[in-house]
Picture 1: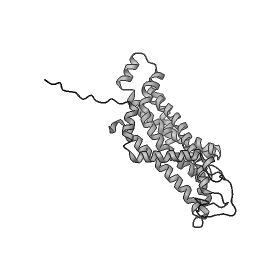
Picture 2: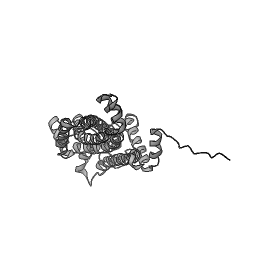
Picture 3: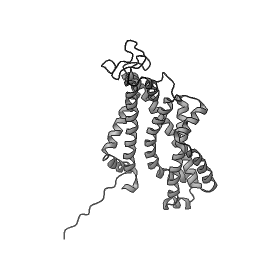
Picture 4: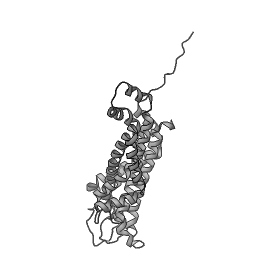
Length: 289
């Protein structure tokens, strides 16, 4: 009687399983490549930008795209392509730093609120409800108006209105995870609350937090551009993309390149972050497996 070979299921590590699922999302992979290219271009702006971000060329004022100026020039003859590269450093920094600050505060508040419950949960969630009662851009405008214009204050403002969503997201995951068997088992053998939250609950909340972070960075870049557009963000002659849009709005129909190319930069960056977030959600969400 011949032996029957039994197929042994392949056991993959969490990272290998994530990559196996994520690489099937071709649009997300393409978006990740675009974002990587944007980040590298922004980081290398001092070396690859053909001109300085504030270097004028009074012989080429309001010039259209050409081999000398790939995206044309603005009202002072400054090269728009160079300013977009330098502005990418500002916009991406605002997006990443503001989301990191808001996410850190929101994750801590959500963990504490969901784990302890009771009065602690009620107090934190009512505070989050107050923040959520304001539209995000209106809350950011209020914070910047209170602190004063400037890119640093824009980061703080965006971080503030990012906190409540992260807190509610993590709280919901914490409420579900603290009822699981492995958390109950750890609690029964005397594991203390801080260790329970950090080692047993926090890792379970990270997939949803990572997905939302990728989506939130795009929103933060868009919000920063909006604040700069209305004069509450980076002041001129900063090459921030929203500031460039504001500078070119008076020349629509005369020199469209001043607003066209920064607008394209914002559109491509935000779209890439959103598509990447969709791919990460599909690869990380246990319910979709």
